[in-house]
Image (cartoon, rainbow, N blue to C red; front, side, top):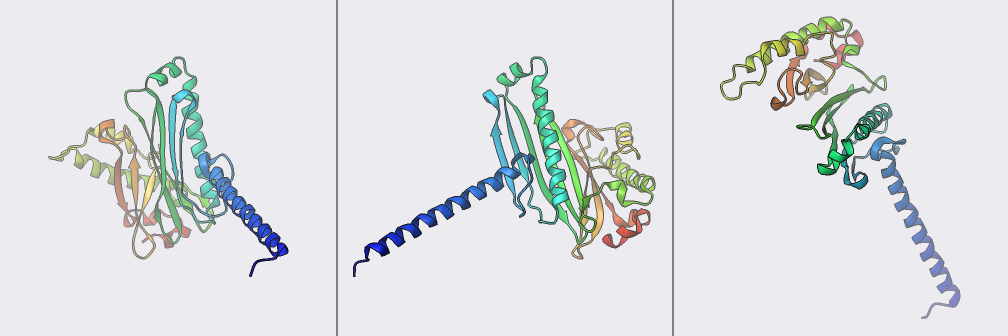
Length: 266
C-alpha cells in the first residue's frame, strides 16, 4: 500500500530533524575537543584523553601535546595542567623572537613535545607525570620533567613539602637515601653513572626544590608505600645519563608526615 502525500511529508520532516540532531552532536564533540586542546579554555565536564598535534607558521615548528584522562571531580588538577601547558607553549613560542631564531628554525624546525599522563592513583591521591622536551636549535633538546599530585580529599594540587609537618627533616631523609643509591651507581661495572660525588651531593641537597618532581609507589591496599623522586638531566648526572629516579620507602619518612596524611601511607 502506497503512503499518502501527508505521510510522505511527515517522513521527510523526521529525516531532516534526525540530520539536524546528528550534526549538532558532531559539533558538540568537536567543541569539547577544542576546549581541551592546548588548554586555552575550560575543559569539558567529562574526563577525556586528548592529543594535539600541530605545525607552526611557515613550518618553523611543531607541537605534540598529550593530556591525561582525569575524573570529573579533578577540575583543579585539570586547570593546573592547562596552565602549565600554556606556560610551556608561551615560553617555546617566545624563543622564536630571539635574534636569528626564525632563520635557524627554517633550517631545522623546532619541536615541543609534552606527554602528560596519570602515573599512579590511590585512595587519596592522583599523581600525574610530565615527560617531554623542547628543541629550539641547540645541540640537543631540553628535557621537560615535572609532576602534579592531586589530593582528592581537599580538592587541590599539593607539593611535596605540604605533606610534611617537618619538610626539612623529610628532605634530609630523602637526600641521604638518594645519595646512597646514586653514589653506588658510580661504581656499577656494566653501566656506571655519568656523574661524580660532588654533582650528586649538590643535586640532592635539601631545601633547594630538588624533590619537587616525584611519583607514588603504590600497593594493592590503595595506599602509598613510598615516593619515587625524579631528577632531570644535569641535576645529579650528565645529560647523556638521562633522568635519574630514586625510590624512598614510606617507613623512612612516616614520622615527618602531617597527621592528616599518615593514613594515606603504609
